[in-house]
Image (cartoon, rainbow, N blue to C red; front, side):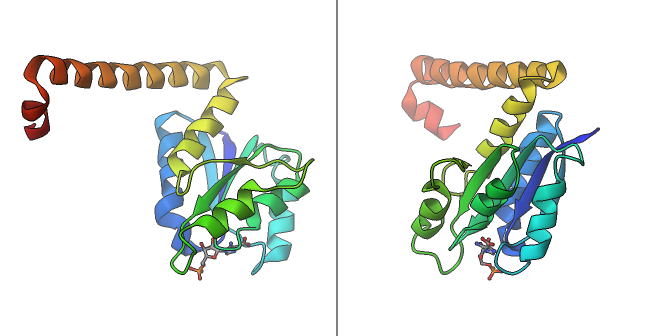
Length: 171
Ligand SMILES: Nc1c(C(=O)O)ncn1[C@@H]1O[C@H](COP(=O)(O)O)[C@@H](O)[C@H]1O
């Protein structure tokens, strides 16, 4: 399977969160590559990564970082591929706001599609829906995923309506 999505993160400490993006892509049948690269600690690797991604066949980049999270924005400045940013609540963060604002508040011209704090699963799903815009197999997988999501909510609603909320809570 070709690796259409590039998942990167600033540190190994981000892996527990960023692995959720990888799991979502696996479920949706999208190939990906995953590595650790930091704008601050490995700036030259970041430049190489961003500049070579398109040649490797990557179509969307998911970049996660905590604190002064410059990685997603800097990668977006170095490539014309779409970049999805995942703000991460790292250990000494200001409740995650440091990372959210660093990724969200980009200057005009260099957008980063920012998901919720620690929202790496949604980043994976969003990347798959971008791939699905031109890849029919992934589009089909997205349709199935959405149908399953809808069926689950309908099932839960039926439980609450038929059994009542108390019995549903005990399930
Ligand atoms: N924000 C960045 C960047 C960057 O933006 O280049 N590189 C690492 N980091 C972040 O620092 C936090 C703490 O990292 P350590 O756990 O390695 O000290 C992580 O959430 C990482 O994403």
